[in-house]
Amino acid sequence: MTPKRALGDFGERVAALRLEALGMTVVGRQVRLPSGEIDIVAREAAETVFVEVRTRRASPGAAAESFTPVKLRRMWRCAMEYCEREGIDPDSARLDAVLIDLDAKGLVVSFEHFRGLEVPGDG
Image: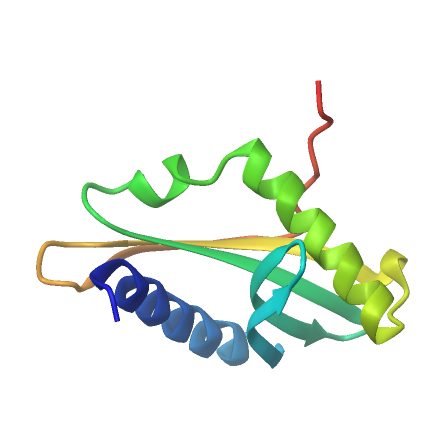
């Protein structure tokens, strides 16, 4: 396993635990689809929540800098593909992001959860 993959796996485990502590039910991790991968699929009440996790070991804010509008649009395409595959109403889908920054020792120094992200247009 590469160091980058190990860092990503660590961040996804931290995110899944935190989301479950908030009352969400994690129903899938690292869900692979033809259009890409969804880090975490969860349920919260009547919503299916698609979560992108960005983990960085650097100065605070590095994880946020790695989350771009292009990534968000790709995430939406994956979410819609998942909804079609699983027979889920796309109107009940929501995109969230979890951004985790670690210090040099690998300790979490920042954990941010953004709910209900708006998908930017292609322009």
